[in-house]
Length: 233
Length: 395
Image 1 (tube, rainbow over the protein chains, first blue to last red):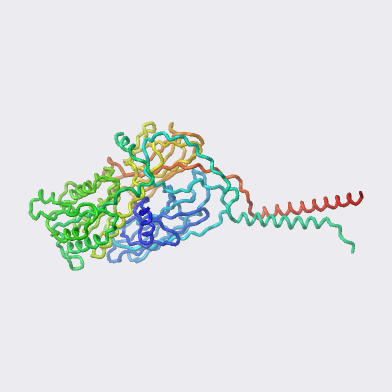
Image 2: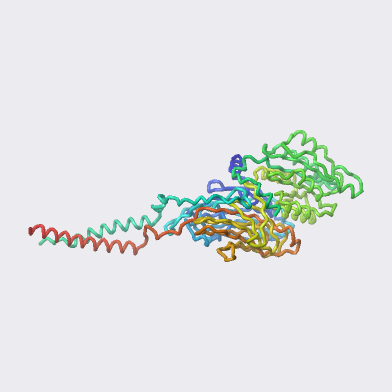
């Protein structure tokens, strides 16, 4: 428990160096870390259906006098199964000119869906990983100090286009495995009650359907009034 | 197979983070003759390193065990053979007595050769083979003067032993050769490299590395050895595993999946050596007789630490699924054994059912249909009422 706590407390000032050690961030905890050129920095954040997470990273590059050429940087987002998620907006892989002092990267992923076919790569609720790194860099520029600011925003969009729910979010499984285990008793996975999924969560579909009902009622009254005998003038 | 036999004994206890021993760090400091150079903020490299170490010892997290090892600190002579055996542990790995550690550091005098490879081996031995996260922080100002063994080869050996040891390297005003050697050592073990040109940079970085070591990863993956065919493949339960895969090799694992369960697999292959510019990894799930079920893949180019892929597959019946990991790396150096580190995570969860048609509607057409239906219903209701009222009056 204390490990988790420490990780949370350190969230604003640190970054992980692998998927396993990725530092959690959220929309209220932007990350600000010092690192060096050549580091691979990892963060993780949770996302739920309907959100459209967007990341903005500002890299303060090492002094231009110490650098020997252009650097290519990239910010990448992976889902809980470490599958690459395409960015639909933002400057994902900019090139820092030799005289640039600062670099801004951005990546907004597609709206997180509530369900997708297992074979699909659509973003689903669960954990997401961010990796910030430089992909091309002059060899002699490795190891120079720099600063990174990372902010996360997650606007909630309309979930009206989605149906279905994912039985379990895509979160990493944090326990060591067992090789050649004893065959587990086949406890049949009890079908979970779908009481909560009977009413779909609020979306524009509710507005449309309710409006339709009201309009239909009004139209019904109008239709009824057509059939009334007109009073003779 | 021997490996597999050993791993069976590992408990699958989920709450490990609480009970494991403290994370362990060993600082390995180069005290060779070149540390006398007066080129960091007008002071000698050793003086700066000593002060940085002092600060790190003071600010050490309580939960971390720290040790300090030096190299090239005692033998002043010219006999290379003797000078290249010169490495001692001045602070044993354990809870740190700050005063004693600082006294030991203060007594150091820059003296001899730079046997980095030997010091790394010794440091790995100091840290033991426990379950806790273990990190070596290597601080040097020059390349190894005692090759062979080449320190990078030593680092690869240590990593291949599966002891989950990470070596972070720090170059003090490094030249090109030193930098390349240190980058090679850190890449081989999944560590980081940084250079320090000033006292502040050195202190900050050592502090950062020690802080990182104090927050160990949430899981220590179990070791597994994948097979070359599906029928010989080890059976895996949900959890995290590590393995090694050579370039161009296919590794097979078996996962039992129950009815209406969803299998989730992800794999990361670490680039622990220089590889050609473009590369990829392919993760496949197939039936035991080789029919492909689903695949996950990724390809990239340029520098990277790992490349990952993942897949989901839901089963209708009880079955065994073969998981196959393959790669398309190419490397000029050491393409053979021991292979690149691979991290496999396997999970089975309840399958998600495909959604029914939506219960609610949307769009202008819906409104039009509802309005027309309402209108027709209204008219019909009106006619019905009139007819009913008329027949009621007549009677």
